[in-house]
Length: 534
Ligand code: NOJ
Image (cartoon, rainbow, N blue to C red):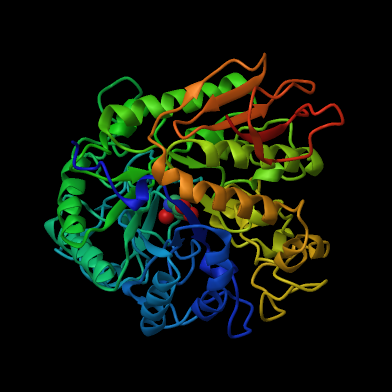
């Protein structure tokens, strides 16, 4: 039996808490740990089994906390280490495990290592922890290579010498405030293994690994030439050795490693999930696919096949803090997500998008494996339009103002009441909340059986008991053109109608749940899903 064959993480529903926007306990307009602690009963009653917290460490917030200054301390805006420990243990008492987010590819430019590197001369051991290089051109005025930042613009910034002259360049695959670490350096590896121990010792059940495929760099830092050998920094073979060491650390605590891997090749992706590497990883393929029965079926089949080859459970992700909110994405002409395609003012039919998002929720929650649910999805929040002068995401500025960035899915949650801040906490929320969000508050949706919150809660509770019992299998059957229909070994049948009209339900003994009402003739309407007992 593979090493990986049991464990809560194989079937769990995991809720992503974007701390800055979840709930604000001290009234300063920024979410914090006190806010999360006060809302733990809400999370427990939702029916999820674990919480993943986006980075809560000391950070200048150049990239929403993915620019870490101290991996062992909580940012004062969020609280203290003592509070984090309390939160982890209170959550556990309510049956909620904690996953912390570790960012190994880069640090903040305020991290002591980077400050020391800037203060030290070229060629120094301090600089060797990063990627410092001389520039090209007669005066070194050109970056060392042509690599581009994931956020747009060059992946290099130039330093200034103590004499005020232009100096070496340093590599940052993201914003300039996020210098990349040199993963060929043993000190970098030791430090991160120690950070893992630090959080496992404080009760973390799992670690989410940020940008997990980008750490290793070709030491020559060559330009990327498609078709000519391995990529200079994506998915390099050296990485597997790093994760084997991490696995040994995690195993000593019974902890789980979850990789953030955006890799188009499912076979390459699955290599990270071999029995002595990561336990699991986010599958982003499904959210990149359009609302189309063939595309979704293909994505599900490819995902299941790649995972079963290595004995790992599949994962399902409809949204997170980097992508367009589901009800918005599914209400647009382009229903598959692509970073490069994000623009201001894209026409959106929210009613259509919401209907599809409800059906997609039942689809993903019925599939074998684990599900990640991003905060606010259970409220059906749409992507918010953030006025340009309030946008904080570096993706916006680095795209020359073309990309609206990711702030639209990071707006503080509406909890109760009829006007901002909707019970979030302080009125001066770090991102503005739309004036028409009273209809989305958790309080309002609690009492509505047809609300998104009620749908998620019912589905999560029905799923919870079943998920552990049902083996990993899924059997497709034909329920007509444009209809996705499958059964699970415990008798659950899921039917999703992506055809252009209503369809009859397949044979069943009971309708357990549906994402919208059946029509008067008992047919399943377009863009609607149902869970049946077969
Ligand atoms: C992935 C994170 O999800 C994203 O928010 C962040 O900007 C990048 N990694 C860089 O850390």
